[in-house]
Length: 124
Image (tube, rainbow, N blue to C red; front, side, top):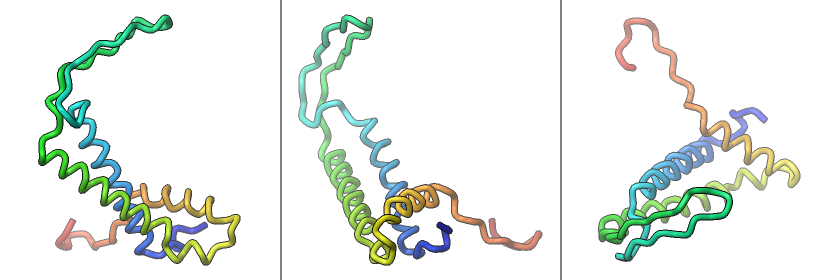
């Protein structure tokens, strides 16, 4: 399947879905481990490892953190629905949809082609 086969709006939505998911995951990594304030705790060591989980007290999420997490999660849902219900998928044979969907994910991760500009012209 050629990347040109995908409608531009579908490729754009998939690219935005990738970017939003990356932003959401990065944001969530910085959040406290508990949404609500909670005391810290330590887990038991497992028989197969010396690792012992240790969680400090959690201050909980601030109102701004709760709002941003909900905004990003809502945007992920919107984009997921837009991509998965795009009319393009109904133009393919049933057996080709999964392969095409995987190709779209791959294509959307690649940087868009740069527009050629002659040397010495303005612009990036």
